[in-house]
Image (cartoon, helix red, strand yellow):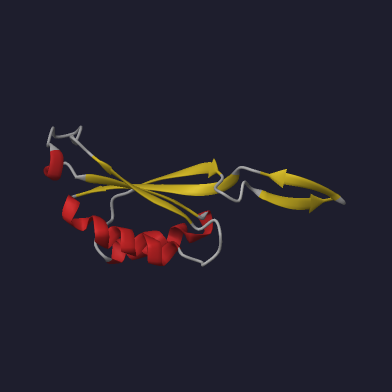
Length: 112
């Protein structure tokens, strides 16, 4: 099993959810997060003064899937979250040792 974690623009969440659901991946976890990448934030003006916003709002999506689904999901997320601009986000993939469904005690593939 693998955990796919994607940090994306908040405005692209619905597009990503729709793409995943259309492909049959309904289960996911979504969190509002803040972060910055290589651009180290953005400079904005307010009332004539410049200020740097170095932690930008983003959305984190987490999904655990069998290993053979990883590349398909990466492609779905990348294509549906892409705007072509700096700050589109990142996708990370982690190994998952065990998963347990709390309600039934099912494990691993049966739990996801």
